[in-house]
Image 1 (cartoon, rainbow, N blue to C red):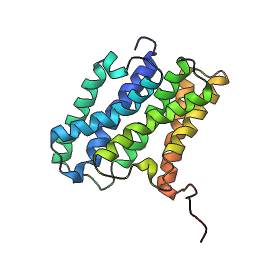
Image 2: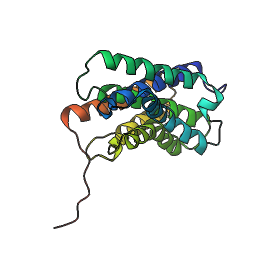
Image 3: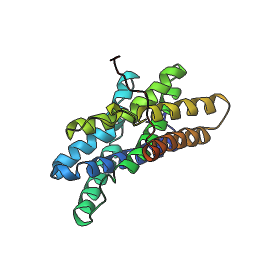
Length: 207
């Protein structure tokens, strides 16, 4: 991960921890044991970045740096033990999931920019990094992926944030400012969509 700045490395580690914890929270009603929770947590927190790295033909991040694996497993175990002792509100995973989406979008987009790909491809890679881990998580727990549910503004929020990061970067903003702008927009759009039930048009055939 030598080509990744300290800032993006730190954000990526935070994203792994948050998504791993979110995966455990979503499996609360699935009655999984610790091993099952770890499998889901690994898929959720490492899946999007793995696909991004394969598409960019670069070393897969958690194979290049085992600290990501340690971070993920530690986060899963800690959240698993906490959830067994503290009764958590229904749907509590939605907020940390939005935070994880924002963090991973920023990381994926910045890594794609550093790899020198076209800005449109970089924005899509940011969205893929943000969304794909959640897709794997939902499939493993037998839920319809959030990105496929009507009106959630999930992938839309991620892509908007990625485009904002790229625009800020193109206008001379620093990496930190660009990341903050992109991440904040992802989080804002996602939380507004949850709060006010903002929806994208749904495909319907004429009656």
